[in-house]
Image 1 (cartoon, rainbow over the protein chains, first blue to last red):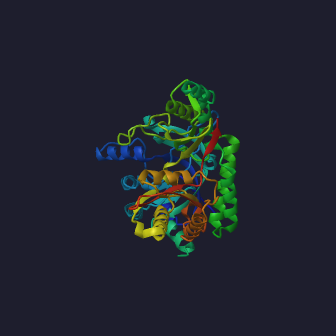
Image 2 (image 1 turned 90 degrees about the vertical axis):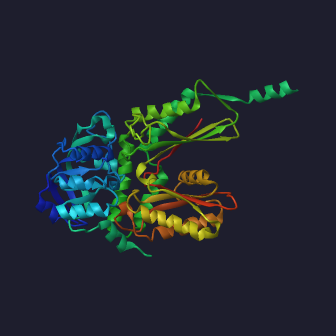
Length: 184
Length: 292
């Protein structure tokens, strides 16, 4: 299958052209964020304050990388379970977030928010963290260093492989894939 | 006579230095995270042959490649280097010297995670949620056995698969069918979240906490090695076949390889109880053992 090359930030047109099952290679800047960072971002929004990163057209990668050993840009860096960010994600999508990378199913509320705002959810292969780390060519902490592995990192990625699991039209690759092979 | 018996006994006591425990635990933490056991890698390769989904095959091949990179470059196969779960079989003829045993294990975890550049994934207070910064506390399961050896297994356990695990106190009337349904429902509900292909550890019997521990211990068995009791081995095979008909597949993207193995451990239970625990392990089924 041909892979679609995407460069961040994603335009509305780009994100709404994607469909479930499409394999993509991501290039450019993406940000990391897990539960603890999401909690803080949403607290800032609640207080009407500015976020430490501009989310317009951006992608958040749900990952808490392992520390970089000497000579490396980053440690191993595979996706974490996206469902833990479900209660926060719609707020960030409202701010212009166009993509999320993780693994595992999203809630209906997140799916609806993606439909409304034209965002997509990509899966990276859970557990293939040593392999994925090779696609990360720069990494720096840009917010919440006290959170350690949960700090927000600005990553530069080159041909980072992911697959569209939820598109902006309510499609769900996990459900479709399961239906295709279920023998019950 | 009493004195004589005591002195004979004392001759059989072997001392083990806690500093050795620190170093060995540190080494095991790193090796477990860098080098996936051959039985797991072989099970990826076998599954790749039987998998019909093209993306499933690709993912299984990538997992073999990932394991090779991790082992060759001494980096963690998964960024979630886990809770350090430590199983200890302590020979009753061993005397531990030069330190506190639990502290030695925790110090080994600190050292291993620091020196191995492993991720520190533990919060100290589960509600306040501040990272301890050194991956302690370790979860230690201690069993006293005969002999004069100390057997230590470090089994780092990731949060994603642990979160999809479950335990239920069934009524004895629900029997084996109830147990099967609970296992299948748990895997179905987990879906793509716990990083399939999975290894499913099942505990049946015991009390609530014993049952959970049985499920965890079941994960330590070499992948696909059947239980010694024929009826339990048959149940393992039946559950594996049923799980692999759910369609979840590698990475949850659809396919026939949802689980690599089902391992069941059993224990006697109260006349009123039938506990069943399902401990789900992702494909990074990590554990390393040393005998001191």
